[in-house]
Length: 375
Image 1 (cartoon, rainbow, N blue to C red):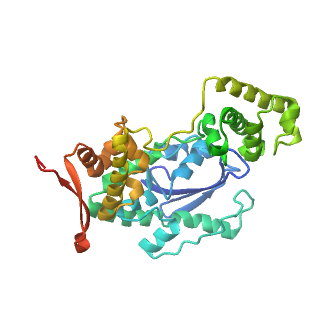
Image 2: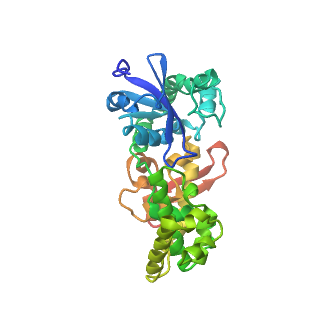
Image 3: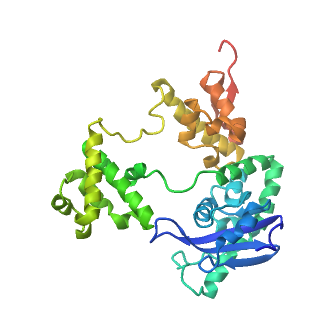
């Protein structure tokens, strides 16, 4: 790829699997630059050779980049120094998280094949259909970027899109905290008392073991077995083996002892008090401020409609709560979001702005208006 370095801009996509592993396994890298598309086989080539390209000043164009950035971080240890996400940027011209197929059809009138969602990208050799489909993921990205940029410039939103893409690029990636793994267990909210502590500790043990072995957590211990252990709180290997969903290999030897050790730690922690589920967004706000979350949420949706923006770009409920809670670095209090939304919300909460509604044809809807002194 040395000839690609210094090209100014290149398109990139990846194919990967994670059904049988804990970490995503990179199966293919597609890169297009200067009108040439290259398919790189990470099973036979060292993807760290892409470091000069990724570390250089050239702009990487992707579509729905989050998972690509995750897998590149895990597999290559580096991601592009600059990115442009066509899905993200399209949100600033009125699209709502469009697929590559839909965006190419809308902007270019081009048909991008959907391909087989269940194709095995780790199989070698790749078929002609697989290669053609993989290449199609990067062929149109540059042309879509040019059209999106034209519309962004017309609306004065180029800097907004650039800021959002950099925010995505620098977002933390990788596994979540193993201590939070219990919250993803199906039906976990049926568990109460000290059983919650047991679920948390055993789920943490399961997550760490899955990472060590690079296998899905369910291959270490199923959710139903984890719930069975949490509810019965076994203290011996025989008791452990009697829990629903626990197979024989886990109920003996070092694995069983490791589970029992986790349970012992959980029982000790249970002496500290009750373990609560994380509060819903807004529960920590002062009661007098909670109605403001709903009010601001309505304004976010309306402002997105009026501004032809994807509402998800402006802010989620958590972002609203953080703004109203004056959390340092709240997304709605900084950057382009503050310019078009956050500052007005702060004035709304302080009583210096008001929302009014008009049903007057195309100009109708909610409006943010100043509050006159004495009103």
